[in-house]
Length: 190
Ligand code: 5GP
Image (cartoon, rainbow, N blue to C red; front, side, top):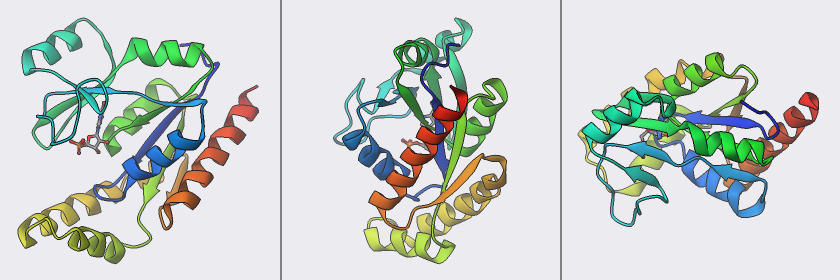
């Protein structure tokens, strides 16, 4: 893969707000692009095919796997997710920094395949803050909150496998920290 741009893996436990941080980065930084994954899960209200995800059937996903179209793919809570390889390569060749917003295990896989990427783990200020944020949404039942917290605790164990760990305390600050990590790493590779 050409490494004109930098491949940036952004991961973090469920509910940590990585999507919000990444949106903030994309809003301010033209050279940063987000890779759009394919998934077999159903769209949530407001999600559009080709924007948040490419929504595909299980058969379509399997055939993409067989054709070698994914840079990495994983199963997460009963659905499949994969990063299409070609669009990422194209953006890197154009000099863009390409963000992969993926779950913790996929991120570790990408680092093994592309050791040149920079991998960033977005962590909550504390597990209590994460739980408070989940509860604050007011949309989840107590059972779901317990389940998500258990998942999050397991995901936190991957933190040490990442190049950087960034605490998501204030969205703008967290976004700035990630941008500065990427710029520094990119300069190092020149
Ligand atoms: P959600 O269904 O909430 O959009 O995503 C569930 C999890 O899958 C999130 O942690 C998200 O970052 C991750 N994810 C999204 N796309 C991919 C992908 O292409 N590969 C992997 N490994 N994980 C992904």
